[in-house]
Image (tube, rainbow, N blue to C red):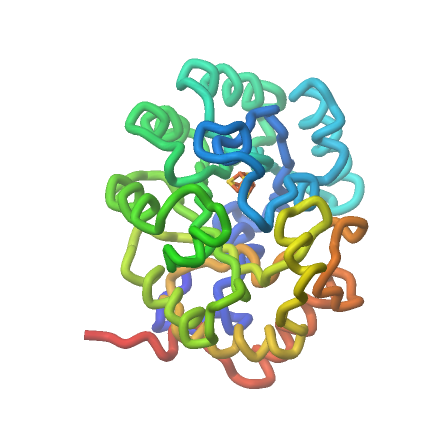
Length: 316
Ligand code: SF4
């Protein structure tokens, strides 16, 4: 899907459309699984306190984290998605923290346990991690599931600038990501990179340059694009309260996306266009709209302005 010969239906390659095409029109939803793993940037092996923008509770629904057993998380997540969204098939999404931060044997036991719970309805596995928490053994383990399932490996890129990553206490460099991407050049895994726009010190041109960097890697299949959120419990929240800095308003961010998407390779599927976090933890920017209204606002602007993903990618 998503070739430049067939402009994307929404102006960009939308993940929902991708899933419907890939799974013959079935309604496929992600079920979040909290495996109880930690993060090397929190437990001291890479750093303490985590990335300055991170409060893991801000992007993790309460239910998965409050349930002890993976089985209960999955069964309840599936039941909720069936009731609320008429979901038919599921992708198990290991989201919170760093989901390759354990020995291969532990990871295999975790993934196997999860995948055995309702195998007839599971069509995919998605694993979120840091680029510096992958090695040949972990990659081989994830690849071993690709015979039967769609397997997505989601890695935090966040910024392409080391000065920003350093300031964010990210604990890894852009080169760490590049090294893993090179290692995964011919992998059957679906690679997804996660970016954030609006870090202090980055200009609009610097952010637009993320597209060129992502485009360099044909093995990147998905992106998740986010605007920077300040969430309670993060180090950045303390900095922001002390000295507030400019954050994206919805219209500015929409303008930015309308400029960014034409620069992004047309075959890449956009899983997300903006960040979402728990309302109770969100400090700024508060756009005052629910997720679906934000999505509609952005989608309508993209269509109205005739934005086409990839239309300004330099060729040759
Ligand atoms: S953003 Fe990810 S890598 Fe950074 S501290 Fe939070 S869980 Fe760890």
